[in-house]
Image (tube, rainbow, N blue to C red; front, top):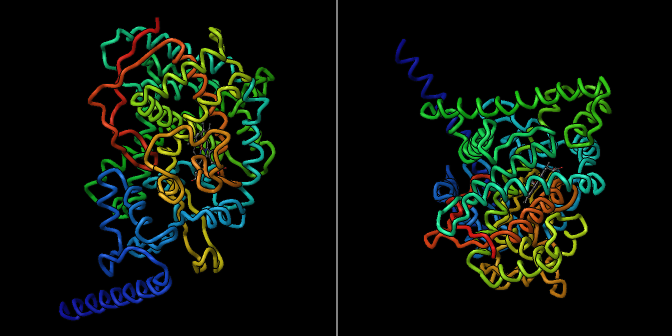
Length: 493
Ligand code: HEM
């Protein structure tokens, strides 16, 4: 009896193993005509090399190394999945600017739910169905129209003043402070206050500043789930998975609370706000069948997408400007000339800060916080000399596109002048906010916030980076500086 049982199990394992082998052979046949790094093993493909880079915190650097070696379109095997990595401008133009290429569920399911907990759900960022997404974007995205953004200028200015006052108390020319920490907190206050009329006061370490840690936990959880499918079942990670689910719950509960509170105010006619929250609720009013859970998807999406990206972009800017005093001096000069000592930054000032725009653009080229976008190729596509088979998940890694030597001269150098208006444009090789229909809805929000903060900071402070400051990267979905951007601040005389 026992022998029969063992035989049945053995036959079952053999059948599964043969099935897997045949399946992998078919996947390899599908993609092997494309260039790409050799598989380290038949069963794991390039997974081991990629995992090692993930552990070091810089998978994009490995993808770049492969691009330099195998060209602007190559294939990669992560166990049983073949991906196509594209950095060719011709492919970027074709695929990212057309709505027929939708976001692949294979990639975005990692954002929809994390370790079994609904996270971004089918919100604006992770909805993969084009029609549903389009309706959502046209309603929720309207919150980012220029007329509303202009109306937020008082709040952007007020928040920047709060940051300045907080920093003034530590600006003794000696004490080292973590600029990244302050920027994370102020970006949190900005999205909560301006987007959702929810004053967190994270900057002064108010009790709600716990959200910074909660959001970090969610991002790390998404990265952990996406990097290695075994992390979803590994017993040693059970406690960690629960921690991530708890963090998601904190954010979703907050979203439910804010939404029901706002609905009540709207019902009684005592709320005339036109912020992100009111647009999220408008989507429900205009679309039958939309539940409060769907609205929370968008709350979470905008809250998280709007905070960590901006904070890290600004952190990188301080790092680079800190080691390029000539760039800092030009920025200060421009701010002084345009503001003429005024402390209030107007919407019109922002458009005149040309050099600052160049510095922000160059920072976002070198260190785009959003590391990757993806699209599904549903039918065979012959493009730029490559045959992409139907049903392929194509990945567009921003870091690689921005650091590829054929796209930029001295690609690793920080040179804001490459974005001077007289210089050739980098069409289809510059996409820190992605491009096409699924490009970042919050781009202008982020740029306004960044410029107002920078203007006011440069008017009041000078700074020196800690001589031991590291420039290492930490890449977990979002690209961050690996350490805290430590600096000493002094008041300008
Ligand atoms: C420097 C700051 C920012 C950067 C670099 C950035 C970058 C990006 C990128 C690359 C994407 C495309 C991601 C993908 O295709 O997977 C994206 C999408 C998105 N971003 Fe941003 N973002 C920033 C700030 C913001 C802000 C401030 C908000 C909201 C307040 C925001 C909300 C969104 C949303 C909702 C999407 C999804 C859009 C859609 O698919 O319709 N982002 N962002």
